[in-house]
Length: 144
Image 1 (cartoon, rainbow, N blue to C red):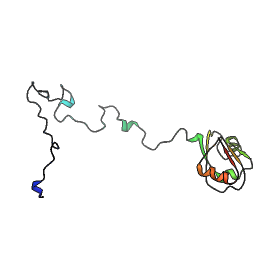
Image 2 (spheres, rainbow, N blue to C red):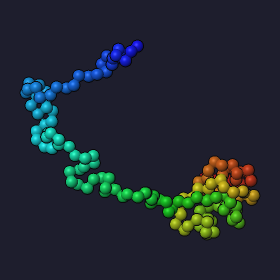
Image 3 (cartoon, rainbow, N blue to C red):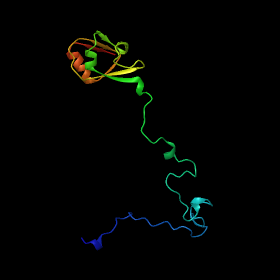
Image 4 (cartoon, rainbow, N blue to C red):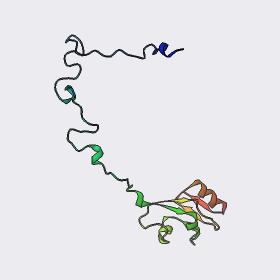
């Protein structure tokens, strides 16, 4: 095999469309560009994202980061924080009363961080799989 014998496979190279060959042809006269306007002209292009003078989308959107509006209503609690409480049943009200989470918290998730050495029941909180196994190993319960 030599470089001068390499050929494209059958159908890989399409013939270029020949435009402007008379009105009898589909792409005659205006060559498929329509009548008048910027796109019909030679050199009639504009930069990517140009919207005809309207403020482009990439300039209308804020430039720095994103903050979820739900962020202030959700909290994450470590097992070590719950272990330090004295209550037997732990729910959102207990966590708010003990200043573990802010007052306006609506959702709480318990994560497996720290050691559990007392028995307690968690009610109405989201709990990770690792935290559930740690709580149950200590003799506690997790209720939905």
